[in-house]
Image (cartoon, rainbow, N blue to C red):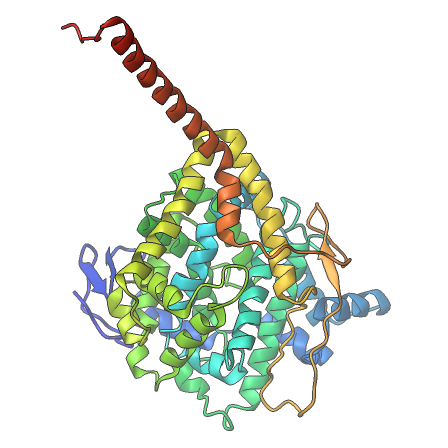
Length: 478
């Protein structure tokens, strides 16, 4: 069956086959209909909101440094700040550090296809959420191709921070933990500001929900986690059951740190997480009723990706990749351009190369280890390069109502081999394409293949020469 977005009481029961665009699944007891999801749109993140209100954090501050300074200088810190810090530093009972480490390794094993999916599957597909697009349009993050490009790499930096080392998520000291801290308070600043400007920007909290509410947080968490499992399946690459559980465990902890209600705990299992993601698709995605916002923002994303180093791939290529991964029907509703047959071949060739790297790394462990270490270096260098050699502090750069002439300033940072924050030193980055990287990573596999092929050719040649010289023709005996 199918139904329109916004239907709070769909006539669906456990066991029914449900379809929307190219998403098809079976409704289970874990799926949530609209009347369960809609109240979540009125729930924000009270702990983070209280900190922003009490400390009067402004948009261009390093919020982690500000909160740390406050706690170190106040003899009796306010209960709002203490409560937030205690919650951020608390390690949930269900957390298994060894599983977190394995989950981070899963990310690096599937790194290239995951980052491809985040842009062309999760982010572009997420632009079909007609209520979320109101917030994105209000912030102005995707108002130009340049801002979109910066925002995409800023998000990539945030992901790499959380996955870089097993200690990246250690409370207070881990780089990933600090980045999550900053983004969580950034969300609180956005909520506070948009509520104040609701009338000016035509945002109705009663109808659209609290900005960056619990459903938005859960939906975003799911497109970074369980959606990757489905996306990889569409690429012809499958995670093992153990890899899926480990990968989801990392994002479960990240979701906890980001302020997702622990009572909901949408990623407690892969099956539950998949049901939450599919439920938000049915409830929120409605690009044809977004007053054009979904189409504008989806176009902004692929424009921000197009003709950019290190690959310099065209807009048509990125649009075709979206169609390959998301399906034609949703991309038609998002008004994405259609590519040629050659574009589709190029996309599947790119997917095939990424899949070959993964499979080769699982067969030849040394190749897999080498590729993971190389990926870490390459990703880190490219992101730092595309952010103009500076780490983002995840500040609100396009604040509605900001005074003209306000500039965004970031302090120069880098990360060391332990994933910890250090001062940035000049980094020279080669303008190498991903294709050259793929070739370099595949080199041992190609050499081995060439050696086997050469040996086989030599044997065949020897047999032919022998038969010609001595009049002997080998035959098969039955």
